[in-house]
Length: 354
Image (cartoon, rainbow, N blue to C red):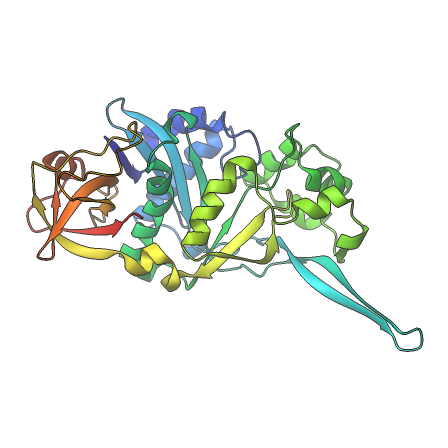
């Protein structure tokens, strides 16, 4: 079975192995064992309520329980930019006009901003290529939203997701090669690694303090502003279906878009339900390897995400499964109940997948 759960110390090596497949540009998942170990420990300390708001962050893993192996990872930063500046470029307009010459020009500019300070961030989303099947991508991304819905008081009112920017057929970032490189005099992967390992002081020291005029940039740069990495297109579409929108903020390194929304208006958070559970042995188990598995027409079941609502790091679990709803009860297969560690009297939080 495939489950989502909080990351723990034994997962460090598996997460490190996953980081080898990102292809660069996933700043929050560097191939650095100490950084990943520190990230796991920070997540555990967040669960135990040891950290101030400025340092809180939750790291989750997807585990294939048949192999006892981590195959995906995702995270939530509770409030960004409170301990060190959180930078983005705001894409804005600047007007140049002269009545004497009858000239009126509206120019696009990039302005360094800290507009997202204090917002929550959905980040570090990566799924092993071998598991990009069925509903597993939705499980990986949306499980975080179920967690937020269950713990709404822990999070602010706005949430963002910074997405990896466009890279060309040579795995180069046109935005970095034509813009950022001139200010940092470093290779993209080196800057990306420094930022991902928490060494960010250089950003404020080296970033341009004045607006950058988009009209003066090469066409290939203009074309990639706010566009995403090929592998990130499904994640963007999924987040947009949840209600997150591009509000003209982009990543300072690769020009990738930042999507944002009011937390209470995010679809999964708004529509998730708390339900009493029961057992039904006739319900099929979900099989992500089967392309037809999202339909169990024989038993008239629905495909949904189910979380166990436990608040202990050792117990919190989310999975994707078939279920039935009868008389306000959610009926689950015994294997799902076992995987979620459900006990009599526990409620579950569910959201039907569409």
